[in-house]
Image (cartoon, rainbow, N blue to C red):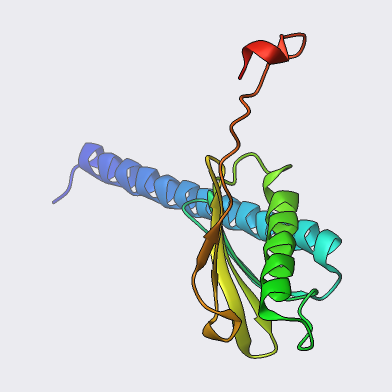
Length: 165
């Protein structure tokens, strides 16, 4: 036979467990909603630069710190030389990733794929603390391109630029 005190304690434990489950569900729902908002924001920022409908997919990992994005190239033309195409794809990637990383300070890294139809033209990544790296498809000569790091050091507003070098 269970005493009234034991039964009350059991009910309190059940209630506490139910509250914990509800809080967990609530937090997970909020995290999912925030992720959906981030994904839509990334898509909007990228498409503001590349054009409407160019972004094929967007995902986030690492609690939104890393964005995985794929888009249709807006600069690729089959008539262009491989060298011209490589330069244009690099500029396209720099503009698109910069448009996302600029306003979204919580995004630390973007990994991306640039496509033309079903073909992958280039893949790459950019970190907030590292420059853009682009790996080209074999049809564009393959290889990896990384911009040279700037030798100019940032100067605080009102600082003497000649002292920064």
